[in-house]
View 1 (tube, rainbow, N blue to C red):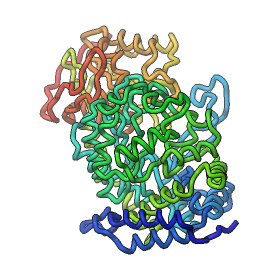
View 2: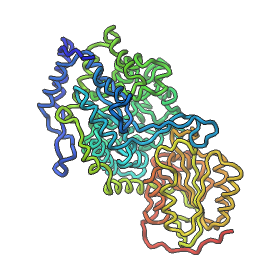
View 3: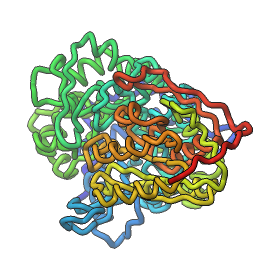
View 4: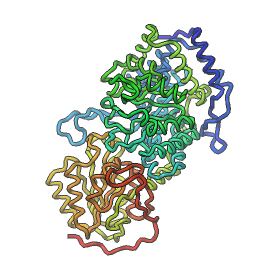
Length: 637
């Protein structure tokens, strides 16, 4: 189906004038003096960019305009031209002229088996995207498209958070624990440079939610912390870094998802606070982000009774929350993206077409990842024809989308070099930054018997116990694959075992026997956020076993909590030494092992409160790798 390219009418000319005026502040990509291959956002107005936006806007058909408002998702992998998936993606480009694509990781089918301890009854499991496959697929779709595509991704933990081979950085709360905005800036710049090399232009980061709810099942360690001021400071630093690397930044999840207790992937969340409380907490980092020049804001699927009386209406679909508060009161005129429209908070209440229409009417520019993109596009087209959606609303949104593409220089060059990907993605220098962040984030909560660092001789017998929230759903590697080899490099005799939330009495007895023969016990507790267990903590049987192992004072026991930091609240009163990493990846395991073995200083401080235990800023400090006095091993039984 070919698109009609008739010029727009009177309303379009009015909007076009506004777009042209706004382009007085358009920034485009120019090469850095230090690195000609790395794009940076330059503050110099570009007349060519303004002319391209105006010319393109005038030539767009009604269908092409509608297409610019939808960004479907795709899997970052090698995709054959002779495949149903590529045919589907190409049709969205050719027939609908979609505005871009959002890059997800890969998925692979798994057997649907009862009693299976690994797969469960899920049907599919996630895997990271492939770097070269992602770049190649995006290039091919760019070739198919008449207009340049705007490509987005959730690079919350660096490009490696989604794409294998790119640098996996610790997420926001680890940065918050370092207390160093400069690290956030460096992390943002690295993320942007690697992302642009892959063909991604806009990052859905920073997460500016203020996480002050210990039971938050979806934001949690994705937030910088619970202090609005710390979150604001880290937000501004992250935006600065993303811009320095040539990538557009997004503040999410508007107007604040940190004090909620529901995962919006599963249902509608509610933030039942007054407007005055929102001003004091949730809106603080958003205001800072807007003042810092953030390019986009992502809405959340949460209901705010103080702002909208409709009890079933999420912020994403509320004019009070988006058009009135964000656009008019806060004065934000950048791009507004919805959160994924495939989440149950939306799909359980609205059809794809109805949801897309209500989102744009509410003030969003881009409908992200609808469950049925063509249904969403048809719904927008029908709403425009019926007058539910106005031409002015469409034109304003299209103007913002084109302006963003011009800022990125996509009107000049939209392709990425596959040959350059290995030179610009990953590498030792990038890994060194990841290691630095992870190391400086490690936080020592308690060390009752002064066991840190673990100063045992090489001949000591050590039990390494991996305690996982569930054996299911590990998208990134496998627990302990980095920590355990490092421990074995230090000690000649390391026994290793793992217990899950389904631990049996026989397994408990086996662990007891191993512990009796060892001089020390090192525990790694892996507790994910939005994991398959939905517990956000360890199972009672797991905690009871750890408490039992800690009962013998002559045998040191050190525990590291990987992931959800609030899980430590159940462990600190029972265990003598507890550390946090705020992550559960290879880089976090490496940082924890080096801290425990005295090879790195411990300087992290809590960016959150552990209720009844520790306040924000708590953290025991340990010096760097000075000479360690080796003590005699405690006798095992």
